Length: 381
Image (tube, rainbow, N blue to C red; front, side, top):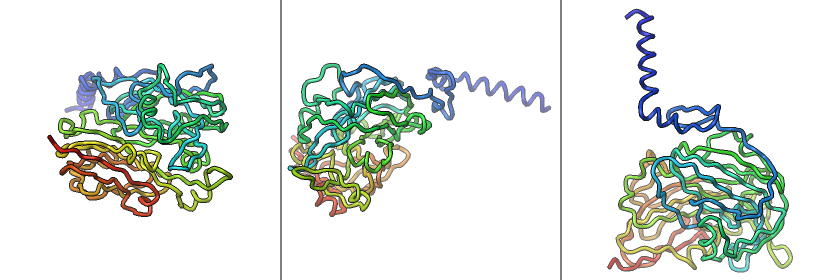
């Protein structure tokens, strides 16, 4: 075939492919000038906007933002645009009986709320730095996320408002954007708005990216985003219970009658406490519950900020594990799942019989510092 005819034929094929249903559906998801699609994924999102607003409403807004260990099911079809607000401010929180400190939080808890979206969804995110004002999260809040009612049902952190004016930012590991734009630092009283698209499925960390990142993270600014695969997991119709667990370290030292963050201990990787879901009793005073024979799915994130996690359920074997929460990364029959700082996994196990099943970091120094939880299994019938 002559070169000219070949080029004409290829152009026709290219046009036909561009008009294929999948390509058309992808093109219809573009929202702003400058956005483009590569391999079905959206890039080139608008520049972040920093502004001031007279806002004192709910600090967490979004239908799919929940408190640990809850995960809101995705009850919609196709791709969705989520309008999410997650303000940052200080709270006095307890991480173990008698150990409280002034934490820097997203939404008032440590870890912060869990966001659940689907691969391909778009998130329009707003955050106000309210670190210069007292924000109360322990009373009923109208217009907020499901997070608040769930948080108030498990008051083990004994939240109390505090003031600690500090610049902050937001870094979503689930977003594929220019960090120097979207993750920029804002001062107390300022707000930022930007967008990101959930291009990849997985369980992702979010955290403050303002220096010292170690300090801001260890002070409490982190949480999880669950991006469910577009076609789901192969066991979705078999799972009886889903729970989210975030492991993290605290570095506290005595300060008068209370405790404060110890930066040298953080640099030395010598935590005072290692916890599941922000408190040594979070999964003991309020254990997870299932029945014998149930299939339990755990979305586990090791937020660090620095240590590894060797997660194990005593008496069970992980039937299936998807490393980082991606269906392409499947393991089977695992006794322990090793995760570095900010790594994650979706893991499932079948509860073999009634009893108490301990969830532990098998690095036992961390377990003795608090990384222990419980699942209570009742009889099958």
